Length: 67
Image 1 (cartoon, rainbow, N blue to C red):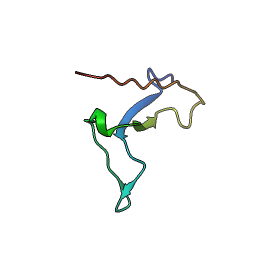
Image 2 (image 1 turned 60 degrees about the horizontal axis):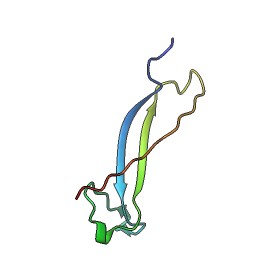
Image 3 (image 1 turned 90 degrees about the vertical axis):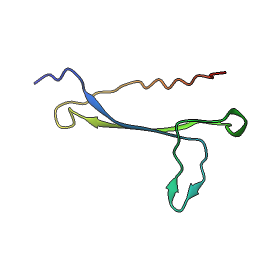
Image 4 (image 1 turned 45 degrees about the horizontal axis):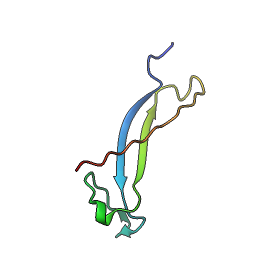
């Protein structure tokens, strides 16, 4: 069986701080420039071919400044 896609997107979570709040990261989707020095992201995928074949991918993360 050859799958059209090798993965299915589960979730993309973004956050700015490495600090945790009550054992949970504070995720958000809108960031304020004055309060943001780095953006961090967690990408989760479902591996459709997990027991069929090995594969690799390249992830490109883009951000935009809207004024």
